[in-house]
Length: 615
Image 1 (tube, rainbow, N blue to C red):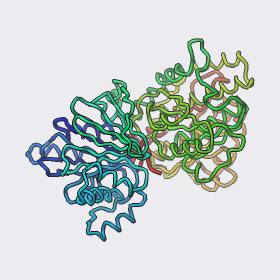
Image 2: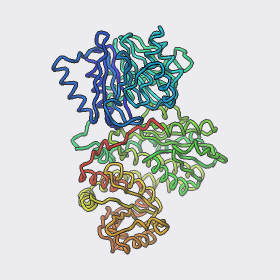
Image 3: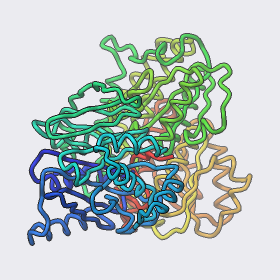
């Protein structure tokens, strides 16, 4: 999603802003821009496409001395919502060459505001919702208001989920910053300050971060920072010291962040596991804080990959703990007005901790009187701060839009929630818990061995790279994984892909089968494999190119498959119980290598964003 960065009080502010924008590229964007103030003159530079286009323009202007890199600048990477991708719609948006604004989110009532402003003589050069903000600032400044008061008046009339930064030639030593449901952080420096969509974007400038809360706005100067809450009271917000390595993110020798993050999983998983065990080897999950003083049902809300993790978590919690679980798309939860009869707890899952759909589901659950728990990867994120209780995945920064290590880390947390609930409510005994711990200790090596399938996956990717569509099948734990595999393939290779429960093929999807259509099944010896292979035979008999990724016993039974990929030999019970984590590896590798064969932008696929902060 869109990213904003600003610097005030530091030499070469525009250059520093551009460095911050580079750290926000992982979010996904389609245009970029910067604005700065030079002797009461507004300098604006914008470009379509990759940030390198903006950098090249900036470097050229600097070399010609046509752009003065001063001590105040704002910048933006845009992911188009209102209006197509164009220079006109790129941020910063300006008014009268005096006010510039960068904005993340959506102004819901922009149409009525725009109509009024046009009637008052303001001219719009874009079709974005954002442009009403600079025009409103200009309007209120012309009425004799200072920058702070003008910002307060703007906030009174705009509605929506947003974070924005404004500069004005009339107030050249000030930034106005506001946050409503969309995240923003302020970094504290020495006689200078910094603003960014997240700590990562300004971690190269400071380690002292303040996160604005919902409804907060601030007036930022070189040496002062005044923060106000929604009621216009001056407030102090906690200064957080971010990890020193948050800004030191690189590809580590890999061609893409996605591949680096896939291959980090054997080392990341032990960090997640270790954080969820106490020194006495008891599981470090507080079920009372989770809302389970008594046995009751659980709602899980999430979006995208996290939603598929939630579906797998449902299987685990219901089978291991005998607790009913409802899984909802976060974007639907509050709009369908759910019944919470018999429920005490809602669990939300978000890699970024900023996904607006998921945040709103959490808030709605809180309104309904439920205990709120979050599984997040980013400590200090909005969801992390607002949840009653948080469990952190410890996956480290994930830059590629397609989630890999965060997905498997989320599964670890969900699995241990299931085990904790099972132990509390006497569904599993101490011996079983100890065996599960042994399995978790085996997991990193097993994942490393699964990554050794890469050469076979590369060969498979060459077989399906030109396909127009791909179907993934699975049963039991493998069904949500089939959904996740389809999502991975479609989001970075742009091949249409669908995941289905194997038993549902005959209830409609089988009509899609035609000669050569790749049908990929994840399968293990879990007691249901014969039924799954029977479903696969239905696709084979209708001309599908059948591909099976599974253990040796299953591959022998599916002898008719055109392509077979054998996973490493693993203990049967371990393999069955933790199969979604293990089989996530070939699913991820396949999406990656098909995309590489097709030459797509793997880390930043078109139209997508890492952190979705609009509904």
